[in-house]
Length: 195
Image (cartoon, rainbow, N blue to C red; front, side):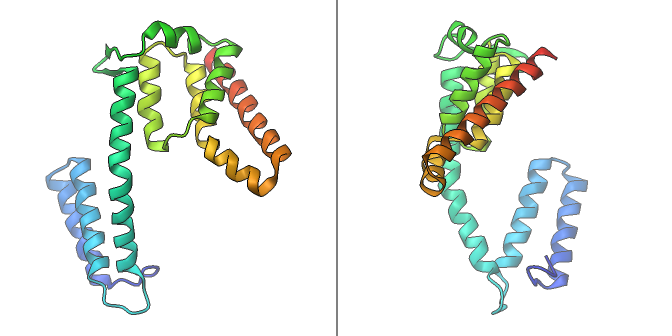
């Protein structure tokens, strides 16, 4: 922070000390992270240097946070509502019957791994929502191999991603890329599920 962001060293050290003290006395990782974020944000917002963009960086980050967090919260709630979840080793059913999930992606067959790869490839969901979605699917009867296949194909592809790739690389190369991601995700899921 001192060298790259060109922040005053005494402010950075003060922020580090406050964060360490919070870790020592409070101990809750979430609180400590919030203290660290507040320290970094305060230092960057109060930066008066003309040759840095620290204030603009913090304000842009805050703008993105305000855009993303409500959508992320809504997505996680909807996923939990539809798929259910597990808490303290107790399965909480969702709206979608567990039998449907177990029928489609249960076990470790090539077809269930392929279906999970296809769904992951075309589904557009944030990386942060993947874990709650997969947790709900696992609680509903999804196999571990298909879960991995979904987790591998999801970040690599999405329908908007495919459209952008097609515009840059062309249709044939996009089809090859999508096929490679789906096939390799399927193979990885089958191998992982059989271990």
